[in-house]
Length: 626
Image (cartoon, rainbow, N blue to C red; front, side):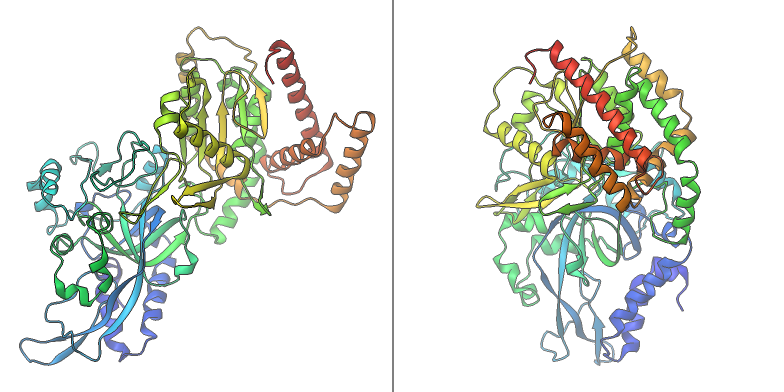
């Protein structure tokens, strides 16, 4: 059996050895996958594999096994490749069968007329790092890695000799390759990461033939590698916007760039569709491997969450971890509630609702209705820098987040909805192409007087659909295609939000610090890292818990609803009942309870009554507010 060095450093050797032993038996392919899955099941074996997210590309050995934590941003059309081909040994003149799987380039001397050639099909996914992943999550993933990497001797010299600026100049003269807008190389001192950066802003300008092609990150200012993932098995099990941890064989062969620039006519025999590609499509689908490496997938693990502090696999270790933490749930909840109360200027009721919002999750869909969503509108927020600091504090608690400043300029110019570019045959990303359970912070306090143009109206409509239906309608020019999502939306506003929400809570500050920035910084710095880590685990774990309501409690809730409507049928609507049931569910889960008790139901009714009373009071003070 191959050693650990073999299966990580020389995975192609393992593949070729199994192919050679197969005697053309097609079962060898399944054995390859079983072997690598078996190796990855070994305790801590995941941490031995270097990650594209953490390690600079020039530190990774070509054709070695690497992993990549990513979102599937686009899915390209299937392509053909030589699964098996025959070469002629130059010394013996004998014909030798070769395996073409998990490779981009074949060996020299291919016999194109051989009857033993087997043409196979694979698909390419364009994958990007998980959008909005918090710095603490990235750092924690990097620290948990036990991979041993050294600079690749075959890769470092070229990157040291030529700066990215020179690469950009060269690409100006290469019309068949995509151009990279912003690239940055860090030394090996403070940071070892070699990163590429997304444009600082996204506009609605079409991605036409004259514009350069960026790395297509959904969020502006994002950094990290993009990757072309070659998928061989289980194509039907993957969807657009899936978050995956992919294990595959890294390919950064410089020949790929040459092949992209100088399309050899003989290559069209391998894939006739190449001849139908436009230059724009070639730039999008065949970028330089030094900027967008190829990854030949051996195994992909769907990520239910991307919190590095929680076990990622549903194993016995995870069950033991959950069981031990459930004992602490109530105490951690109390500490987190006290922390959020301070952050929300002493408003305990708003802190309670913010905590419930942070653990909300779409757990199922009934027809078109997403169940479990809990969009919170926190109105009455102080102006100036308060909302920005509030977002920074939330960012420290959740693995994924993004703050959208809803200024007039942003809403009129930013691209929120992904759009299909038919010329380049790619999906141009938008800021709402996010991973599941991302916390989206909509800062409406930045909205000033002015006129929304047609793009701004479309963006507001898209946000409304996201909040109400947890879906984004991608723009395919001739039609729209609906993509369901699971995004936690928090809206901060001065008055009632112009966007819909499941629950509005007017903020009632109990303290008025003279220096807001200093006050919030002091509160955050007072928390130990160990305590913040407990909050992070708590919020992610509460989302994963199962929940049910017994028939007895269901009957009690129904009777209670009838009683509430007896005196005044207009006082409590079916919508109010639905909201209270959502609050009751979240209250139970926040305490680590997986079933609703009568006490839990009464508590949900009580805080909803307090919230409604406060909202009515606010309306009477602001008579012009709806």
